[in-house]
Length: 592
Image 1 (tube, helix red, strand yellow):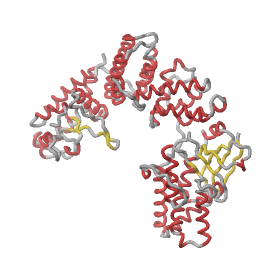
Image 2 (cartoon, rainbow, N blue to C red; image 1 turned 120 degrees about the horizontal axis):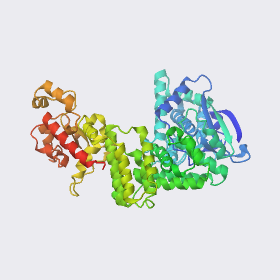
Image 3 (cartoon, helix red, strand yellow; image 1 turned 180 degrees about the horizontal axis):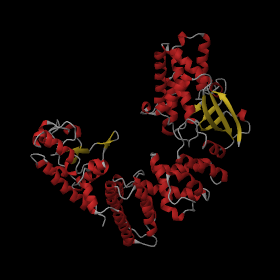
């Protein structure tokens, strides 16, 4: 299993006179260390008293003669090794820039440091990152920026990615260290270089990927912790090789095909694996003590599922991921239809727990004799259910997986309209009453759930749009919605004088704010929140931009039509609009 396991100083692992190369295989995740980890590493080296232990790496050497192999696959420890060499590149850049002040021995050390990073024999990097996320291109670009002789491969937005940021972090850290200790930057760089070179790493060489995956599940030391999804992938690759049913590259390709449908968000990857088990549990091999897939049970569940026919299981996961990608909106759809629109609304209503049911129903649509119209009906009912559930808090979060698994079991042998009726009945039985829902709608809804509040307001606004007046209320800039919730009567602690006068004085205004400011009737949506803010009601109503276009309550949004006609805004107005909007929400999001 283990060909060798030895402790080496970094200057030996990256020997300047050797030809050894550490190649990170394509299935490893891209570089993911962040500022906190860079700071920890640097501080550990600053404080090191003697040889600092940097952890363990695992390499695969598939040749019989370890000494003869010039390329080792780095299957665990790639984050650590990449970071160490980026620190060495930052040190090299300082020494190279100050080479004139170094003596002959130190100049030789600079040359040798360069050869630790770039192999003398072929001019290629000693550590070769994978290509994901432009890691390899960014790494070469950093080495060139440090002054090493290598062709850079600079891609757009290079400076925004982590490899570039890591290098710049260490470059600045060396400068700050010199300033804090009152020494030259070159002296600070040489001090950290010595600490890195003396630091030790345990290198374990194994003969196969299967052996490596068994080891690195428990050997991740100070690096980024392996996630359950990573560990399940590793188990799949190890089992595929052990059983000789798929080679590692083919197994990885199929796994990656699954992830492609799910997008880049790890949370969606992990949730899909949970939902897959919960959706198809009745058809899957029995897993002891796992009635529902949870994060803590996920690895054990998939170890059991992959114990059988691996290829069949992977094929099923890939097929299910394509459906799940459509449900979540992460898969590209050439021609979105009414069902895709309904699914987007369900996602916006925070209906992710119901993906258990939707994935199963879409996969069984032919068996259930469900048309697209009927599926849209089911998704729309689920959206109504989650608007109510996320505002009232009932049923509780922990009960949702079992609820949807129970619905699946009750659909056994039911088809067409009867299947829709079963779903409707189960949702109605599990939901809060109209009275409870209305009570929450009439309370301080903004404080209860801001996301549900925004969804309700945007839905009411969208319902009144035509093709000519349609506006995308879900567009984002820099990760934030352009259209946001606007408090008509301002929520700020300092109530403007105009509002105090309108509401009968400072004391009355403060009492009104405390009781009514977060109620549905006092809320709308706008793309110009910062332009309205604490302005008086007439200013908010009549606000225009520099081109003379209305950006206040006369902006043409149907949700604001009533506000555009108002001369003032009082508690009575808030109460009346709250009552009116609550009626519309109850009608818009029914369960039966």
